Amino acid sequence: MRIGLFFNRFLMKYTGFKCVVLMSALCLFIYPLQAGVFEFADDIHGIDTITHPTGYTGVGADLVITVGISPFSPHADVMEIPVQNAINAWNALIPTIGNVTTTSNNVPRDQFDFESVALHELGHCIGLAHPNLASESGLSGRDKNFTNSTRGADNQFDLNRGEDGVIGSSDDRRGDDVNLHWFNMANNNPFVIADIVDITTYSQNLDDLPPGDSFATNGDRDVSALLNVEHTEAVMQQGILSGEARRTLAADDVATLRLGMSGLDRLAGTADDYTMTLRYDGLTAAADIVFDFDDSATFASCQITGSFIGQGQSHITITKGHISLNTNFLWFFNAIETPLLPTVAVLANNATDTTTLNQGEGLSLVVKLDPGVNAGKQADYWVKAITPAGEFWLDNELQFRPSDSPIRAFGGPLVNLTTFSILESFTAGWPLGVYTVTFAVDDNLDNIFDATFQDSVTFVINP
Image (cartoon, one colour):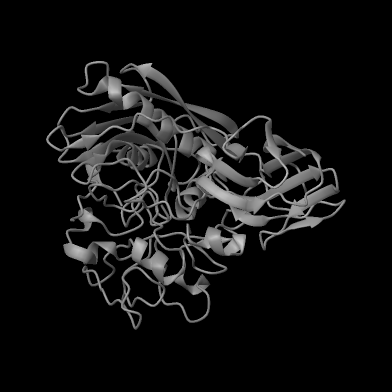
């Protein structure tokens, strides 16, 4: 089987994330949330309003936003690992595919994954809103999955799913609804991110859609199936299933936050750009963002305060965030820490160090990969074997070929490989001596052998 084909295989009822927003400074009121979409974007504050994380003043900076757990909250102790995992995912800011899992996660079918909810609510607390109309629209059922917009001049949502029958896709007919979703102008695909993310590559103006498209596409899982990236959904899309995990970001989540990072001028690479790091401060109510099972939310909500910045009225900075959760649900608290960096392993006959074989015995070579928070990042994969007969490289046909120059086994997203066999063979006729096999992945996709993360195993063939 081609290794590329192998990787391609990896590629109940909704409970809505309800969110309440408080805006301070010029006004103070309770307001429903709307990423392809930012908080506060609407007819009142402006459809192109961009909301920034705590600490941004309009000047370029490396922002540090603290995150804590109320020390008096129920479940405080078991919240720590999943909250830190969610923080790591936002800090890594890596777009992934296949992030909706049901059978390959550790969430019981009747429970809601706290880590997935925490990831979603953190997104609200740093400025991102729902890319779909969601429950705040007052709509019911699947209509809530149409792309976020205002009601337009007729003061009602115009909802037509178009010829493909998929809600939230590019052929939806929305009448005079005013789009709030920032879309990739090159392809209107929320599962593909542009190299540069700013107003030169992303727009809300439907005149900037690719030819033939009628409305902005959002990151719904049904849309992902339509676009051949199955089981993928924007983290900020409202809705989570019991027994489901959605613990890594999609391209739409990353692109929206990066658009905000382009600053007041909305141009990447200028002096007002910023970076953002979430920092876990432990059990404390004094952080910029605080988690608390205080039952003030129907399910889960993010409550934020913010104020206008800059010369105009189209940028708002969050000043405080509070995430409320309801104890009247069966919650699952993941106790497994997500590695920050990929970990790789290669085994020979299940051995991780040196093993010895008699000539003619069977040999099994297996590789393993845990991508950590880099899941979905585009990278090069390599397998090199130094043998008594020279240097060999595994190609994309899963064949070892002699070469003095590197041959890439695969180029594509980093995925979780619990065990993947690269060789099952008997060693009859093999040269006697020492063999060293190295499995490596890079931190980029350029077909250059960097071997950023690597592991080796040695075996000896005796007479």
